[in-house]
Length: 535
Image (cartoon, rainbow, N blue to C red; front, top):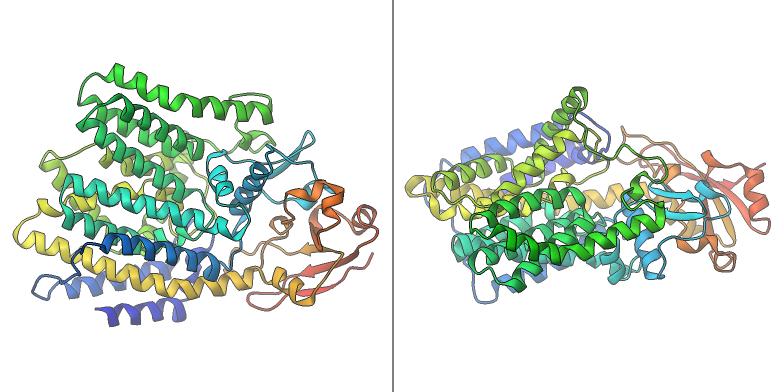
């Protein structure tokens, strides 16, 4: 089985150029993505014909602790080796920018001399403020881990460990230790989880908070103490401060779960008491920057497209994206993940074991039907990661509900999924490194040429058809938060600007003592051209 998956992985990444799954703006899944899913599903189907129960290492005394430590280590390998410690896209850099701003005890920064030409997408210059657009929750966590310092790379690894532990505890409480062990293995070994754990996206922190919230909600359902209810409100508040949409799904699930135990009004009061400070903090943050407590910073500079859409054309686009997301989910977790999840859901409902946590993944899927915007560069359907731990909880909780041949088949499917995910993760470590090195070739080139006291004007174009394309010019001016301070900016060796947003004369006027260079990208994996810029 392992050899078969290794062969399929080699075919996929080396012959079918499966790296294309990282393309950000494709509205249709690549044929090769479906090819690997189909081939793997056939391979699994063939393997399921063999008799006998799957043999899997049983949980020992320190098995969970060792697994969580190894998970943290693998996430660090992804961050430092596969991503080469770069913020992979504009979203990730914006989170780092915001984290560094908070670390400097500011809400915004003084704008750079050339304005937007020295900034990146999702970081706006307006009203004398240089500010990133995202809610403050995840950037605050990043800031606690050091922001743009290398230690910031460990933040999502820690969140992955927290999410995994919550998955284990939830499944153990609903099923048994064996089911919990299978569930946590399935969760942490998938590339969907591990590679987000090495990224700087906010989805892993949201996933951890959602899983912890439902764990606390489960404990409240068993013993509705005031302290636990306030803690539940704190968890929801932290999630709302991080990713608003994920909080919406969790609030619905918590309401359903807590309504079963009665005393909903008194419970709601204590939950609100715990969550209110975070809501007040978010409103105050938005008021300080936008001048309106209910205006998200997303919309501050005119980017008002980030909301749910309920018109028919947008819903049709959202449904098309949903199909893509589910194909990618199968690719990055298991080709049989939908069979597992639907079978688990059916068994749980049939046995009257359905709880609020089982609602979260379907609600998450439904919400993004009404969001027709594409998630851009991604490692699997990243919008779904916020809800994914609870889907795994559903899968794990159903393990003891199957009996006889169905139990054997269900366990085999989980075991094969774990093998598939583990081998895919190993291939992706090296494949993603190749992509990253090509994409960020400019920064490494500048380092190797030892430029100092220089300005580099970036002249690259977006090429969505080539996963190895260089970083776009409008996302390349990654200068840090101190560029608006002349004294600190003077200490920066190389300052980057976007050629599309300024001219040579404007650059020389702003930096008369610096040499000016231009970087022009080449096609695919070819190195770009770095040369002195002429007037």
